[in-house]
Image (cartoon, rainbow, N blue to C red; front, side, top):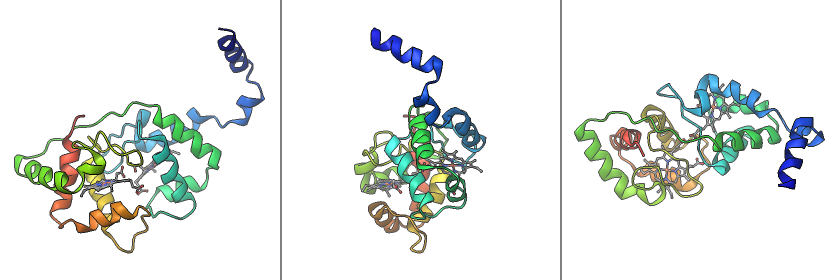
Length: 190
Ligand code: HEC
Ligand code: HEC
C-alpha cells in the first residue's frame, strides 16, 4: 500500500525519474500515422505492431538504426530516435493487445499454404503464427501483402536481413509457395 502511494506521488509531481524518460505516447502518435491506432494497421502492406514481443520490436528497430537490417522506410525513421526512445517505444507497443486482421483466402490457396507451413514454418511460428518462438513476431492475421514483401526480402540474397535461419528457410520456398504461406497466416484469427 505504502509503495503504491509513493509511486502515485512520484507520478503526480513528475519527479526527475519521469523527466529523464522520453514522452512515449507523443512519440507513438507519429507511428500510428502509418501503423494505425494502438499499432493495429489498416493498410495491406503496412504491418500491425501492437502486441509484438518487446525484444523483437527493440531488436528490429536497433538493427535499422545501426544499419544491420535493410528497409525502405523504417531505417530513416529510427535514425532520429535515441536508444532510450526505441526501448520505450518497444515497451509501449508490446503492452498493446495483438489484434489479428483475419483476411479471406480461397480454398486452394488455404490448402497449399497449410501444407507449406506445416512442413517448414510451424516449428518456430506455431500452427497459426499466433504462438511463435520467443524471438519471432506474431504473424497470425498480420497483413498477407506485407508478409509477402518481407518473405521476398528474406529470399533476396542481396537484401540485408540478419536472421540467418529465417533467411535460409524462406529461400527454400518455391516462388508460388510464398503467397500461399503469407495468405494462410494472414487468414488466421488466433
Ligand atoms: C511513413 C510510415 C511509417 C511510420 C511513420 C512508421 N513506420 Fe514502422 N514501418 C513502416 C513500413 C513501410 C514498414 C515495413 C518495413 C519497411 O519497409 O521499412 C514498417 C515496419 C515496422 C516494424 C516491423 C514490424 C514487423 O512486424 O516486423 C516496426 C517494429 C515498426 N515499423 C515500428 C515503428 C515505430 C515504433 C514507429 C514510430 C516511431 C514507426 N514504425 C513509424 C512505415 C512506417
Ligand atoms: C527457425 C525458426 C523459423 C522458421 C523455421 C521460420 N521462421 Fe519465420 N521468423 C522467425 C523469426 C525468428 C523471425 C523474425 C526474424 C527477424 O528478426 O528478422 C521470423 C520472421 C518471419 C516473417 C516476418 C514477420 C514480420 O512481422 O515482419 C514472416 C512473414 C515469416 N517469418 C514467415 C515464415 C514462413 C512462411 C516460414 C516457413 C516457410 C517461416 N517463417 C519459417 C523464425 C522462423
